[in-house]
Length: 64
Image (cartoon, rainbow, N blue to C red; front, side, top):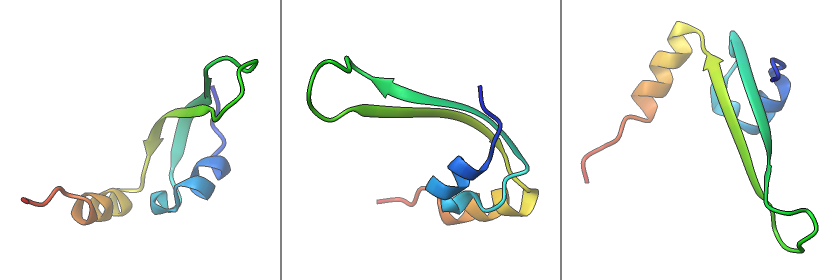
């Protein structure tokens, strides 16, 4: 488990400056097999209330 924020904010700039995070990442598959890898990342991120509000506003699903 990791708690450093820089790798998350570097990849997901929309997070802004998170208050805290607990996360882990890795790859799936067999390293002995050639080809692209599947990367995964699971995180719980605490955002400042105003940033969370802005993200909910900006990314609320719209009717199609």
